[in-house]
Amino acid sequence: MITAAQLRAARALLGIDQRELAQRCSLSLPTIQRMEASEDVIRGNVDSLMKLVEALAAAGIELIGEGAASAGGGRGVRLKAPPGGDRR
Image (cartoon, rainbow, N blue to C red; front, top):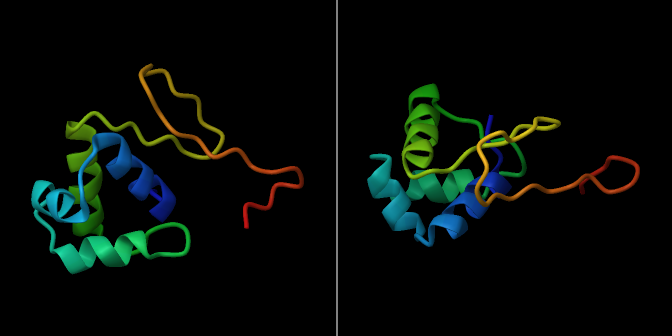
């Protein structure tokens, strides 16, 4: 799973715009825009999500799931849950 916030953060870490990301994962620009505009977890065609995740991984992005540790080292982004656990 990947959230819209993770996608925006990954793109920022790579220093690329939505158009470049769309090219890297062979998706359309409107598809990337819809994914980034999602509320939380990105939902969509499994093939499109796999292309996205694979392109990010190829660029060096490690997606860290909720409660998971990152063993890969390097730079990253994690949003801590505020007291009470609600992120909204």
